[in-house]
Length: 525
Image (tube, rainbow, N blue to C red; front, top):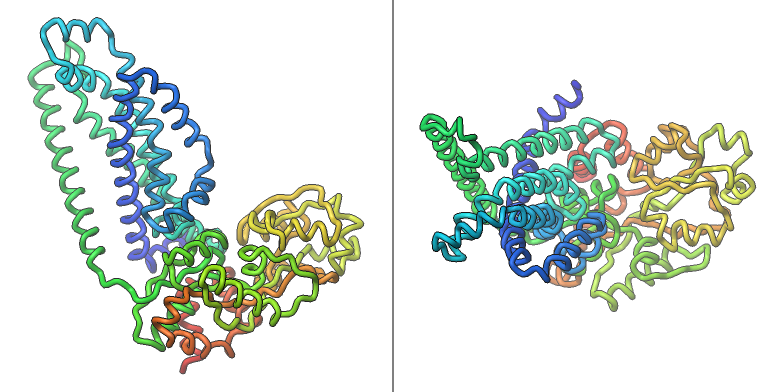
């Protein structure tokens, strides 16, 4: 608890910024979903033939995993808040659409006939009879969508939206419980608050006659509900003004010259901050950070679509995941760099800067006890016992040719079971005996912390994975000074240094930005 309090005390401004963004994006998503869902519900109610196809499509969207939706739309819409809002709107539509249709369908036909009998037009019936009578059911759908929107917005951090999920994802990567709670607790409170807020709106918009029984329909009760309605309207107006004002002020901030991105892993965040801070210190250019993007494809697509201008990746990853190469073992660092530099330039007009001397290649790790029990020294040694062992790896490793797919072919190894974990959760899993073998990275500080044994890649399957900045050619041509700035720190970055910096984040809980700044303070004295 003390660690959480200390973290919140030191990062409260950042947490408030993320909270504000989370509220803003969630409210925008809900508003758009309402503006689409209710009219669409009215349409399918009046045109029965559209009922089944529209509701079936909405159900289909709801059934698709949210991360899959993000992966599908990012190449088309890019990264950031707008894409996150689009995704949340898709998931928020069904409850509003379905409840609107259900609420209208449940109105007693005799009531509508009576309205027609007294001479009301179709428009009058819609706004004075149908919608008021359906409002309790419609508002129930809106309340469900509101809570759902807050929860779904959390995962928008994977695509560069600065929301509370940023703390949760970073905390998981850094094995920092305080950081996780600092994002999860406000998100939970916000969801409950959103439900409470919507309940007040529900009470204000639903006709008084539908909320009170005949016995309670007194002048006093009616006056009370009217006062409640005025307070709710005033609160909503104030909230709208505050959010709009802050949004306008934020939009007026000077745009950056260069946008630096990174993938979600701790090391990527640290190097991303190092790149951004180095550019700011050694050049006059203004830099914006969009760190913690999802996997390789999300970050690379963001670079291609110029949502970001530069980010750190790994030579082996670019070779296999982006260019689709399946090289033979013993491919050298220079060969890999030569291929990616030439082909990324011709394929996507991407400029690859000289790699740093940090080779964060894959390694397989087992506990000291398991290594001694089966005399495991090389990866090939695993073959004799692999069918009895559980294997843990990242979701990205599991589907890549330079990962599990190619690894199985090269070593002809099959495990008893393969489980996917993100970041430091793999180390937690092997420490708690959930898995027996994990994929680690050579610069992971947790290998030593958990006293794991790394197995020799005796068939040299894994490529060199040197950290290298990749940038759009446009940004390099516009600001060529950044090449010299980033190359000036090359001699200070190596495996041992990177392992130490990673340890400061994962083991000591230091913020990646602070780690980057302290590192540059040391080398740029």
